[in-house]
Length: 415
Ligand code: ATP
Ligand code: MG
Ligand code: MG
Image (cartoon, rainbow, N blue to C red; front, side):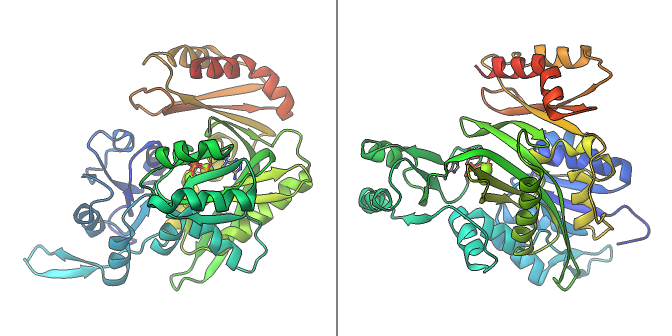
C-alpha cells in the first residue's frame, strides 16, 4: 500500500458519516472511493476521481469498488455482506494494462462477520449473551411472522408484560423499525406497521438515561485483537426514537458509572471482529446499572462531538487509522471539559433550519465555541441534515445554560 500513491479506502455508503470521514481523509492524503448515488453528501466533500455510482447493495458495483481499494469499509451496516465475504475470501479479478488479469484481495474492515451479525439486532444481542462476558442485555424473543404473529405477540406479552418493544430485526435506523406495544389492543396495529418484516420483541427497559461510548478496535492481519480504546461516555437524548442531542460528559451521572460504561463498551467490542470504530448504545437504569441496547459498526451520531472535542483523534480520523492499520492512541482525552451536539433535523418547511445556521454564524462567546456542520442534504421533515457542536470551558451544566438559545431553536424546528 505504501509508496507511489495515497492509500485508498473503498467506502460503501456516502451519507453524512461518509462525508465527515472524507473531510477527515482529505488533509491526511488518504483517498476514499465512495460507492453511492451520484450526488451523495460524501462525494461532494472529497473529489478523488475514484467514486463509483450505484447502490451499496449491488454486488457488481461493490466489486468495482473493491478492484481499486486497499481496504473496504462501510458507513452503514445495511449492506450486502455475501459479496463482502466473497471478496475477503477470494478477491476480485482486476484487468492489467497488458490485458491479463490478477486477483486483488482487499480486506474488509470491520469484518463482514461483524456487519452480518450486527444487521440482525436479535442475533447481535444473542451473541453478546453467549459471549460469556456478562454483557447485560434486555430479555428478548423472536416473533413468528405471518398468521402466527399475534399468538407470538401474546407469548411475548405473557413473558414481559406491557409495555414491550416490538422491533424489526433488520434494516431499521432512527427507530423506524420500532413499535411500542402498550396493550393487546396494539397487536394488530403493530403487526400491520411492521408487517412483512422479521421481528423480535424486547422487554421494556425503564431507563433513566441513554449513554453511548465509541470504541476504536484494532487487530493484526491475522485477526488477533490488538487494542480496544474507549472515548468518553456521552449521554444521548432520543425524541420519537431519533437521537436529537448528545452531552459530554453525561449530565448528573457519576464518574464511576461513566467508567463502567466505557469498560462495558470495550468488552462488547472485544467480542466482534475487524478493525474500526464502533458505537455501543446503552441504557442506564435507576439502580445505576447498565444494559446494552445495540452496537453500530462504524462512526456514529453520538461521536460527532469528537471532531472538535477530541481533535487529535476524532472518531473519523480513528476510523481511517484503524482500517488502514495506522497507530491509534492508548488514551483518548478530550481537549475541552464539556461539549453538546445538537442534531439539525429537517423541519416542516425546507428552510426551517436556516435560522439555526444564522444563529451559529452569529454567535461568538469566550466560553462556548460553536461549530456548524450542514451535510448538503435535501431537507425533509425529521431527516438528519446537519448538526451543531458546542464546546465549553467549564461544566456541562454551564454549557447547557449557555447553549439554551440553540437548544430552544432545535426543539422549535422539530415541532
Ligand atoms: P439507531 O438509529 O440508533 O440505529 P434503531 O432504529 O436501531 O436506532 P433502537 O436503537 O433499537 O433503534 O431504538 C431506538 C430508541 O428507542 C432507543 O434509543 C430508545 O430510546 C428506545 N428503545 C429501544 N429499545 C427499547 C427498550 N427495550 N425499552 C425502552 N426503550 C427502548
Ligand atoms: Mg440501530
Ligand atoms: Mg439505536
